[in-house]
Length: 358
View 1: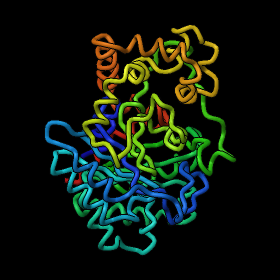
View 2: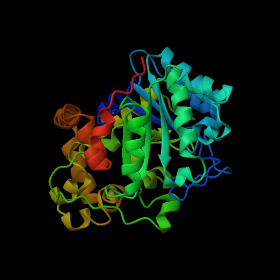
View 3: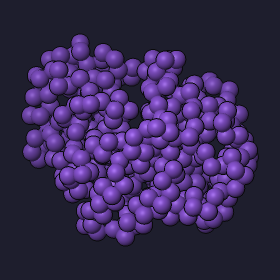
């Protein structure tokens, strides 16, 4: 599975599931959006296996994305989840901070976990490099690729003009002969970066409809709660906004979570039109842009008129059609267009490099 295959499915409701294995991480990167430490919490492994075991051939996500924290702190669980997902027809991908690369080789139990998934992505940025040298990361990624696993890099910088991004993308292109794709994003003021990163960018699109692809895939949070949104503030907020809470892995299986996500009139309209447009449409346009696009969604419960209007718009066949059409248009635009909007636009084309080693 290539990175572009994964991103092409990102706007499709229920096409994927993001599953956080742990908030623990042996690194202490200054920009960590989850503020992960080795004492961080993690979902019960048995609950995770039961939840993935609820996938069926006729009702399953196309992609299971394993993340953290550092998911490879639980390598045996990673392997078991990937195997269970594949039995139902679901492909899996994993994002790692590459702590293990400092050993000079990929340890056996890590390699067994990595080769169980269908795509492996390595995080690399100036903050990671202070703890794991770039040469070690590149060597480990090459070893994983040589084992037959499609690989990619997730690079983070301060923005489009960051000289680090220009340097590291050029080196990766040389080292892998343009055969390894890269997803390039900018640091957000979340987690440990909240104290120093710049304010979140407010999208300059006014009140026009602007679909939210980030509400398409359910997310299993660190405490086992299932959310409709992968924004870190939404994942961490307790109590979670009611319109974003889809259940809990101790009580629910995938079919129930997928059904709630797809049937929610409010989520249909968030995905189809975006939260800022909902404020403008239902008489509270001045509040829609406060704090940015995602924050306006998190605040919907404070604006019952907007919430009720979204529920009316998204109910029934019309709501289903709007949701499906928004997903169709974003999918047709392709992964590069998605990254231009949500990532670092000048580097968006790098996600389309051919990452298949076979």
